[in-house]
Amino acid sequence: MIKNPSRLNAFNDRLIRDEPIDIFKNFRLLDSLYEEALTLGVFPLKDPLYGIEVDIKIAKVLNSV
Image 1 (cartoon, one colour):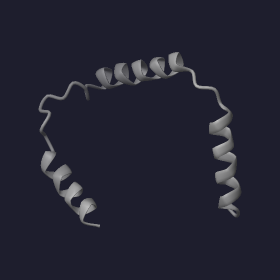
Image 2: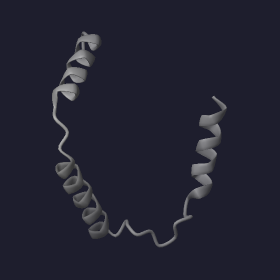
Image 3: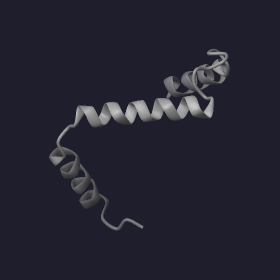
Image 4: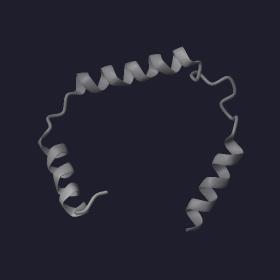
């Protein structure tokens, strides 16, 4: 249980701010995620519109709030 969330948020903000951006590391991560999706058979989608009705309903609900 987090007893002091503001202190944790300050720590996370400082950690993100002080960490240098490594664009090549980010590209390697993206490539790895893409390869994993291919290996799992999730990507490319067989039917890109599969489940679009659910996405539309969720978007309508979120936009109405």
